[in-house]
Length: 209
Image (cartoon, rainbow, N blue to C red; front, side, top):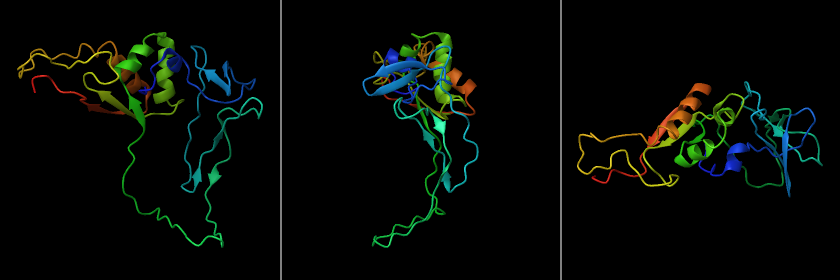
């Protein structure tokens, strides 16, 4: 779940700008500049697995407005990268794709208090669909989750896991505030993903440090 999911509408609507073709069971929501398909308990848009793509190609999807056509998340023919020389260009940029440096571990979002609180306002079935849109194979397949340890700027109040001064033995350590909000969604994401890694970050320290 992303940090920007801070409203009921954002949680309920996995929004894809596109046309409303008759073959799709779309719950249409119209705005001034276009339309979206709202994710409901009965239907959410899904994306078929990409499969293997040659290194010289890129997958291409198209969504069009109601007036322009009938595509919504429609996969087109793969885009082929080609080398073209333009005699009118004096500078040439050469990319050495055999030299590799940083490694991309993946893409994901944060399990914050704000997203958990808002997600709890919708039904269990819709919660499952919401997480599937992010972490499931029919969604965008997030494989990284960031977990704020204790409270953060997306919490309703400031808290730590042990606020008792000088409790170096951690006798009063507790994650009780995370049990109803963060933990259930983290477990659900793990269960439906093909393999998700989590990073835990402490936004603030205990008061006795």
